[in-house]
Length: 301
Image (cartoon, rainbow, N blue to C red):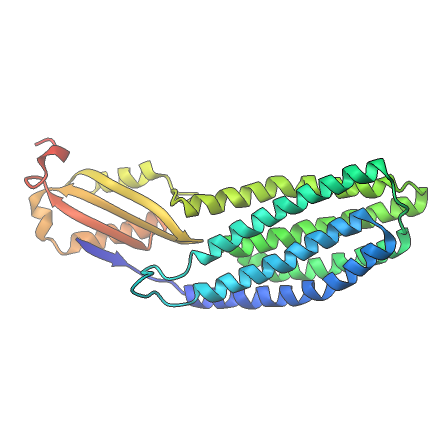
């Protein structure tokens, strides 16, 4: 058996993700207190909905930042892959928090329809504008890293939902100010919650796939198998597994039944590893070669 792998500049990338998350956390946490006070003062459910999302943003950003810090710990004798999976756990926790917020807002909206509350539209508008600016700044910080890490993507989705929430609160406040219809506030709150749910489901599904060691998105197991079988001298492939340790850290292992002449060729494994990295981005691969005579059941002679 041989173990061929290579590592990119994951450490530098992870450190950059941490800085971006820390910046977004400072912006979001500072505004949260203002929005909670404003939601109480204006009796706005839409503003409370946005504040609840802002609260989950703060928690999500804190969890994501903590996950990155823990993931930077080196591998040891007990955790040979290190602590990278903490990032995926952070993404899953954030998704569950978003679902909980959506359920709470739905419940509160149902109560508001039964007992409408007077809404102070002008303070609501002012806070919504400030929230929109804060969220846009946070999104700018996280956007680039969101495509590289599920953990950061979870935090980015939190901030994105808040940005849309702030925009919804702003529109709702303007309509209430112009018409006096307080029920618009409740409708906006429900719309925010409904918008968040499908995106949260996507995030939870991706995180769950990693935790269940599913085949990473964008990689077809059959295509990997076809490439391995097409290699000169390979008779068959078995025990093929492809999974992710965390975002962008894909791993593969396989047993190849080969012509006996390949068993003593030192270049074969290096060549296969290079092809796997080039075609599928698999940088951490473990391939075991088995001679046809040693395992005749796997290859017709």
